[in-house]
Picture 1 (cartoon, one colour):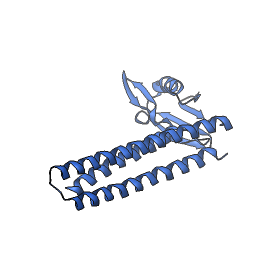
Picture 2 (picture 1 turned 90 degrees about the vertical axis):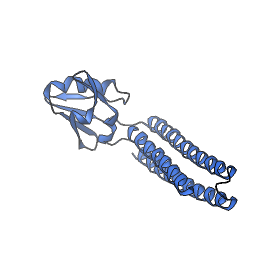
Picture 3 (picture 1 turned 120 degrees about the vertical axis):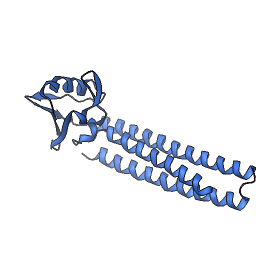
Picture 4 (picture 1 turned 180 degrees about the horizontal axis):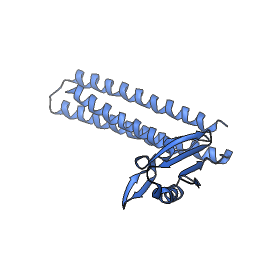
Length: 185
């Protein structure tokens, strides 16, 4: 029973970590990274569709992304979608190819993005702790209903705490990596 609770808590913590990684992908660094455009939605025959499903996104050089639509008539739609996204990017069309230059990051912009990364990391830590709290309360319920012993409860809570510590360390590692990435000129 405790193993089921632990497995459920680990699943929730893993989802929190994945959510953090996807949030970090949206924070752009000075380098071109195709994952930055993952959140851009394009109107494709009246349906909002992810950009990567209607075009290929590649890195041309360290500072430029190229977007090549599968259909030529989508060029203006994709260009508009990139401009209206909250990424602060200004695409330039060259025939069938859309080039998206990455603007240089100022020191102030970098610090703002580090602040955003820290806020995202804190959100991840909170959601991991919430998974721990839920698991521990489930264990306490089992003890209250006399389905497990006090020793099982302590052992279960210790295992949940170790799991929590491991995932919090993963969040810290991801944050440190993102900060270094953002502050590198």
